Length: 364
Ligand SMILES: C=C(O[C@@H]1C=C(C(=O)O)C=C[C@H]1O)C(=O)O
Image 1 (tube, rainbow, N blue to C red):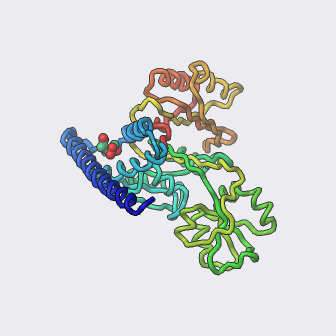
Image 2 (image 1 turned 60 degrees about the horizontal axis):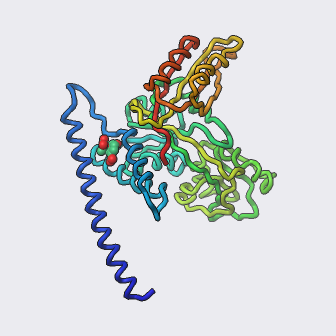
Image 3 (image 1 turned 180 degrees about the horizontal axis):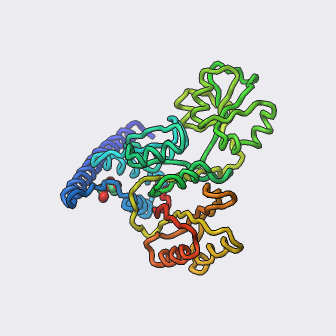
């Protein structure tokens, strides 16, 4: 390609960028206007709701449906995710607590869902994320709930039993783990490997094959593991890209997770009910009396109405020995008439039923 051609293309790009800049600014002004209208139409004492997850899901879906390439749908939606995040921050920047420290996959999930124009607050434990939301110190919290290799994150499920929270969104993240070391570590003399228990479990076979005799030490998060090995001799951490970059570690081995499709699902928790979008999921907690056929009774209404169950998890109820609660996720919104009927049926049989929230299915 000649210099001449390159020059002409760069002029075209500059002109397009100018148009994009203009359009994004017009869009941001619209968002400001939306904020003004929302404020003006408030009833006495009513708090404005700036963040609308159902609307954001609709915007992203529209973008994906209309996208004709060459950029992929996810790539294009990611760009619009950030534009919306910045527009919303003009109305009112969201405060989001997540399971920290900085560099965790939960932080990556928070950014994937809310974009980067939020005020984010790392918390030391899952329960603290719940408490921060309950105290009103932040608008939303982000917590991991299940991993495709290792199953449920029990701390999160148990926290739902203790706090009244509304789930307002979900996000899924592909989880790639790397074996990381700091500059002081001699790679042939690793005597200890730190990570979160879930991550150690997700790499169990790889560790058994490559480091069978090295001590595995579970710490509170894999970002914490990365932070530790930065200054330590002869130790390594298992963590992801964000933590590797943040703490400037070297990758001894990449993508060491046992299953290549290893993914984690995260939930956004808050106090805001989300209206239906037509493509939603609902999470409930149910406790049944301890009698034969109780689980069957619970599941029949879903089957009879053709409702797609996406997950069922059992946890000790904490209110009596050998009594259990069921965490159930299914497709649909609790305001849909069909779902309403099913929930009514279940509540006739159940000791307790709590709807944790209905929320748009993950778009990205
Ligand atoms: C502009 C609005 O407010 C926020 C910003 C949005 C956007 O930038 O598209 C979408 C939904 C809200 O989170 C709105 O409610 O439409």
